[in-house]
Length: 421
Image 1 (cartoon, one colour):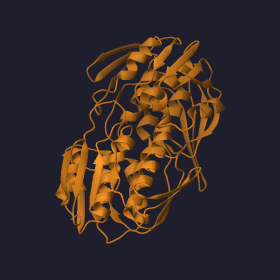
Image 2 (cartoon, rainbow, N blue to C red):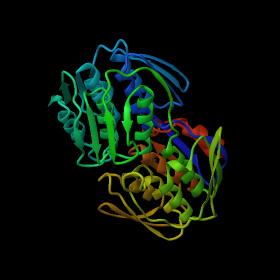
Image 3 (cartoon, one colour):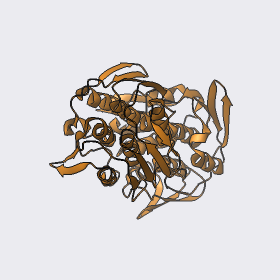
Image 4 (cartoon, rainbow, N blue to C red):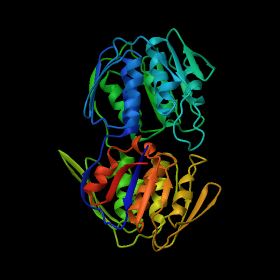
C-alpha cells in the first residue's frame, strides 16, 4: 500500500492544469447507458473511481475505449443490468447506474454502494423517486431490485437535497413517458454538466442549476460528444495549498465561477485572487499573504460553502492568525481528519458538528492516516507547511479523487514523493 512523504516548508509557485471533475464524470459515464449510440467524453480524469466505473459498465455489456483523457462508450450491446457488490463496494457513485438501467432496460439489480466513511448517505430518495415514476422496487440481500414496463413522468419532491439522487432521477426521466418535475433539486455545477450532456444526446431538460428541474421524456437518446467540466474541488484544494504556504500559483483550465463561496473565504483570509478568461483560455491566479487570517465557515448545499472543502479549510485555519468556528451541516461524521491534524500539532476542539480551530505558529511533521478522500487532501496541505517530514498513510482515498496529485504539487515546488508503506 502506498503512502505520501512530504518535506514541509516550501512555498508553492508556478502553474498547473486542473483536471476534469470526478463528480461530473461519474454520472455522465452512466448516461451512456441511456442510448444505443456512442457517447464520446473528453477531459475525463485518470482516477481510480473512473476506472472502477468503466469496469462496471463493461461488465454490463458496454464497449469501452479509453485513450488518456478521452473515453468512448457504446452501450448498444447492453445485456447485463446488474451492478454486483464486488465492483461497487468502494464507490458510492455506483448507485447512478440504477436510474438509467431501469429507464432503458426496464429492470436493474444494483448493490447498495460503499465509499468513504463520512456518514450516512442513504439511497432512499433515489428509490422513492423511481417508485413515484412507476417502478416496482425491493431491497433484498443488499441489492436494489427494480422493474417496470416503462417509467412514467411524475412530480418528485426529495426530502433532502441530494446530488446523486437528482442526477439519478433526471437520467431516468429522460426516457419516461410524459413530464417529470424534480423539486428541491440539487443545484451543483455537476448537475448542470450532466444536464448539458443529456441535452446533447437529445433529452428535453430545463431548470438545471435551479431547485426545480423539468424533464420531458423522449422515446430514445442518440450519441453525442461532451467535455467534462473542470474539477472545482481540485481547484479549491490547490488554492488552499497555495494559500497555506504563502504561495503564488496559477491554475489553468478552471474558473472562479465554479466556487464563489470558496474564493470569497480565501479572500477573507487575505489572499488576492484573479480570474482570467479569453475565448480559448480560463485560469485562476492566487497570491497569498505571509500568514492567513482565520476564517469561519458553515457547510451547506450549493451555492453555499461545499462540504467537500471543509477539511482543506480546517488545514489552512490550523496555521492562520486567530480562531475559526467551522460547522459541518451535511455529513455527521466528517471531522475525522481533526484527530490527524492534532497529531501534527494543530489546536482543534470538537463539539458535535462544530470545530473550533485556533491557529498555531507552526505544525510539526508526523505519521498520519487518511480517513476519507477530502481528509487526505487536508493532510497534504498540513504536510506542506509542517516542519520536517509528514508521512500520510492509506492514500488510496486520495487516488480516488485527485489525478497525479504528487506530480502536480511537485510542479509547483512541493517536496513530495510516493513510497511503499
